[in-house]
Length: 197
Image (cartoon, helix red, strand yellow):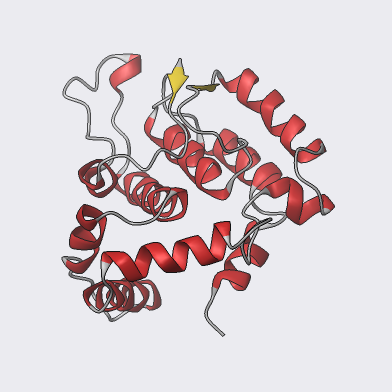
């Protein structure tokens, strides 16, 4: 199945994610548990936020988040909504450009597994990822010029594994294996580096 990786699709798709199937009696339409859908939504949101500068539609959707601030996650979502309310599209684009493109050879951060794990782009982590993608039936659509080990692409792949965007939804063991191989070794450091200082 062909997939579009890290294209930053419509925010409606990120917020709504994969809908529950109408006919859960068939293998391809089996129901996805609510907690899995919520996890998929977060991966979809991260993919959208990290794939490209935020559009006005993305900012509008973020501003509309009504989070329960009684949990740490809820407070984080409420903080994201508040930040979006105070951010213009131009400011968001400027910050994204500075973080990921920079001036000249690159931005402040290189959002690639290969870079975080080896110090170079297009290295063994990318080759390993491509092997796992082939095994899982994930094919690059060609709409992105970024290597597949870009953090946004990996988040989008996790979203697709959960929702069945690449065929049927993958079981939790397959999702965990993919996460442990391609995100766990480096994504936490990336997100720590992304935090404002």
